[in-house]
Image (cartoon, rainbow, N blue to C red):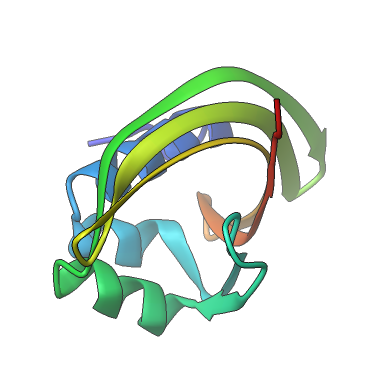
Amino acid sequence: MHNQSDPLAVEQQFFRSLIGSDSEALDRILGDDFLLIDVMTGSEIKKPDLLAVLGSGQLKFEAIQPVESRLRLYGITAVITGRTQMSGRFGETPFTASSRYTHVFVKEESQWRLVSAQGTPIVN
């Protein structure tokens, strides 16, 4: 079990849950109104849609390597910015991405929940 009192620990659990396609853990981590801005396409992905595409196996993360992260706390809100290297496949199409990201967490009933995530590709 992860430490819900530390947003950085919850973020690490988020990455592990994506790699493991662990929909139950993701359901606990993500806020009900979670919104992801996709790093590859810029499209908006809501919580049910992310859980469905991971649960179906259509999206599979093989590796997510955080390279750096910075935490800023504002009361019951935590903003984490960082950089990752990731790889996986969407359907039969493999992908790799280097990105900078912003994750916004809100503390609800003593648990940090991820409510917003946005990735921006790093082009070398």
